[in-house]
Amino acid sequence: RLAHPRRRGSSSMLQLNPKHHRSPRLGERLAPYQQSPDASRDRFLVTPEPPLHPGPPPPGRPPKQETLTVPLLDVEPAILEAAPDMWSLPQIAIYSHYACVGMVNGLLSQTLLPYCLYVVHGQPNTCATVSTFVNLPWGFKLAYGMLSDAVPICGLHRKPYMVLGWGMLWGGALLLAVLPTLTLPLASTIFLCMTVSYLLADCAADAVLVALSTREAAEARGSLISTAYLIRHSVNVLANGVVAFCYNGPPSGGSFSWGLTTQQLMWIIVAFVGV
Image 1: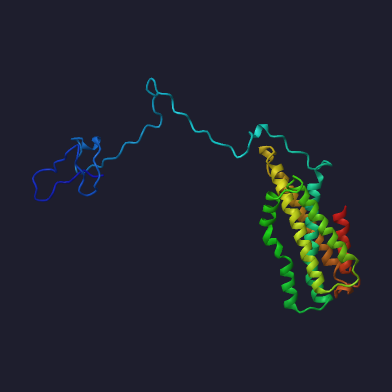
Image 2 (image 1 turned 180 degrees about the vertical axis):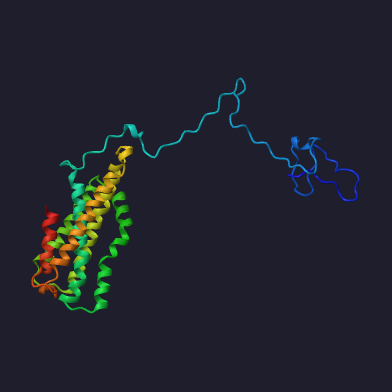
C-alpha cells in the first residue's frame, strides 16, 4: 500500500492516529510497522512474510506437530508382495482372457454387417443400425465395473463375473453354431447378449490386472497391462484376417470360390473360448 500522499493545497501531511486511524481510501487499520517515520509517499509498504524456518518454541510450549501425508495404498510399497509370474499356470488365465476378447471382438464386430447385407439381404440402413445397436454395450463399461465393485458374488468381486460372462458368451456362440437357419432379429439379439457378456468379464479382468500392476517394481510398472493389450490386439488382427479371407465365399455372397458360413465362424468362438 502507498503511504498517504500530501493533499493539494495543504501544507502538512495527514495526521495519523496510531491506534484508531483508518485510511480514508482503503478503510483498513495501519499496522504498527506501517506507521514508521521513514515511510514516504513514494514508497510501497509490503507486509513481511513469516520466516520459513521459525526458531524453537518458547520454553514450556510443546513443539508443533507435523502433518503426515497419507499414501494411496494401505501399506508401504516395500511391504507389498511382488507381482506374480503371469505366464505361470495359475495366472495364465488373465492373458488367456485378453486373447479371447481379441478373438471374440474381431469376429462379432466384423460378421454381423456382411451377414445382414449379403446373407439375409437386408436394407443398408437397417444393417447399419443393427451393427451400431450391437456395439452399444461398449458405452456402459463404467456400469459393469461399478456392478462388480459394489455387488460381490459369494464374497468375490472379480472371478464370478469373469466366469459368468464367458459362460454366457460361450452358450450364445454355441446356440448360433447349432441353429440351421438364422433370422436377422434372432442373430442381432444373440450378438447383443454376447457383447454384454464378454464386456462384463472384461471389466472384471481389467480390475484384476490393475490390482496386480500395483505390485510391480517401479522400473517395470505397466508391463503387465501393456503385455495384456498387446495380446488382445494381436489376436484381434488375426480374427479380422479370418473374417476377411474365410468369410468371403459363396455362403456369404463373397468373391472367393470357398468360404465359411456364419455358423462355422461361431464354432471358432466356441472352440477358442472353450479352450
